[in-house]
Amino acid sequence: MGKAASGGGEGELSRPFADHFSGHARGYAAHRPAYPPELADFVAEQAPRRGLAWDCGCGSGQLSTLLAERFERVIATDASAEQIAQAAPHPRIEYRRAPAEASGLPAGVVDAATAAQAAHWFDLEGYYAEVRRVARPGAIVALVTYNLLEVDAQVDPILRGFYAGPLGSYWPPERRHVEDGYRSLPFPFPEIAAPPLEMRRRWRLEDLLGFVETWSALRALERSQGRGAIEAFRRDVTRAWEAGPAERLVRWPLTIRAGRL
Picture 1 (spheres, one colour):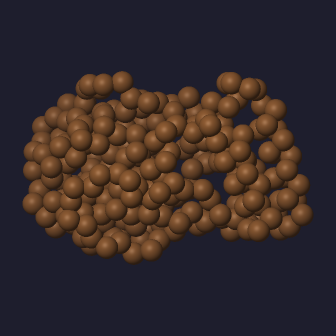
Picture 2 (cartoon, helix red, strand yellow):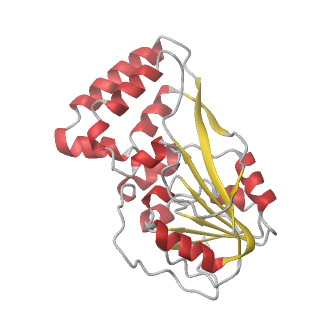
Picture 3 (cartoon, one colour):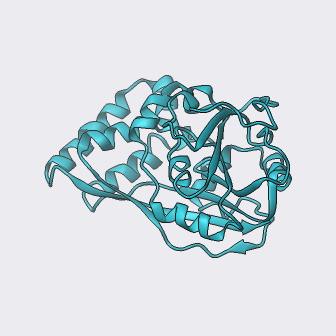
């Protein structure tokens, strides 16, 4: 993993951030799904050139690594040092710890600014100001999100019931923006139509259970009430899964809000 690019040091964490993932950064890296290559294709096609992409809230690099195959350089930032420590290395990616509103990048150098499953945690006013500062004319900004995964008629009702029932009151309030596909987030840029895309994986039961363990609401429920409801969910979903094929197609439809600087 590279050091910070010249022209700006590591961003200072100017305000506390809601850190829901550092404690499980390794599980996040292992179990979060990969974005489809077509997402990076769309971003690159809309960019004025393919020099530099800034992937903000990069987590463990799920989108950063795809962008690195299409851009000469990628600066990938996250406010969590633990997430950065788990990020996938790539010769074209420079990872740095920095908040959304203070990337440390020089002005006017970014061709594409992306934030995947992260913008609902940002100080959006500060982030948008930083995007305007670092972007070159005509750059694209793209916010990407996905809601609850979809499996099949046997598993989905159990997932939805656990999500809305035992976990319902433990989701952070920002989660509502994910549930409505970021439509409730302000987006002060002329919008670009994005193609319909989704993430797909072939998963076994242990993959699903590992993914659910990365949910911030699950950890909050566990701290408050213990693992009783969690183990009940695991039993129910295991029973449903084992009644069908061992490996199943899992889908996450994506929502993309993209705009032009």
